[in-house]
Length: 52
Image (tube, rainbow, N blue to C red; front, top):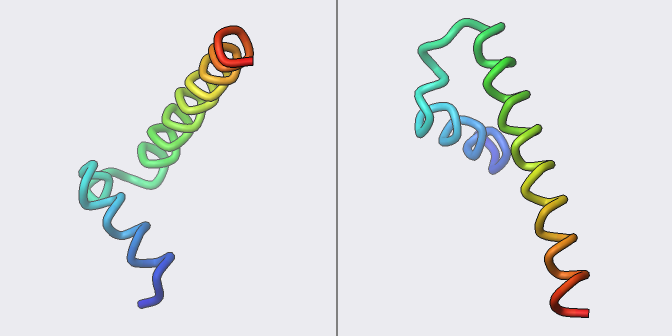
């Protein structure tokens, strides 16, 4: 098991994704990606406004 596979395994075990079907796991991952996009967008706007 290489480093990337180990991190994916830890992600699945930490959030309990190993119990879900493939389509439920994909839905959860899509929601996480969308949430991270919103957080990154907010962070960049915050830093542009208050830091620069």
